[in-house]
Length: 127
Image (cartoon, rainbow, N blue to C red; front, side, top):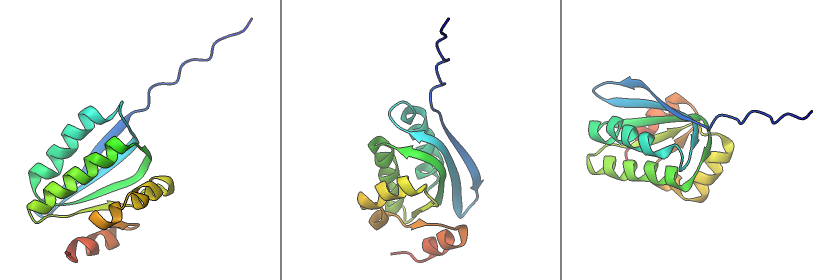
């Protein structure tokens, strides 16, 4: 008697606002950013970042996969924030995700840092 293993739950994406004050928005993303998870995430990410018009730190330490649609979400938000004089810093991406970000040239658009102090310094050192 064979059994069919249970189907794993679909991967999910979670976004938590760690801090949202008058100077900074600090967000943590968790999970996979792909076509299946981007819809609600993109709307909420834009609402919490671009519409606030403040500097943003995006903690990506728990993002294990980012498809091109997720890259588009990040660069779109970073460019919109730039128009308001605000910047976005990516914090501590998973090594595989960081490789994708650097290969795509994202480190030229938004700094990639590995600790919170460096991320805050990168926001102060405006280009």
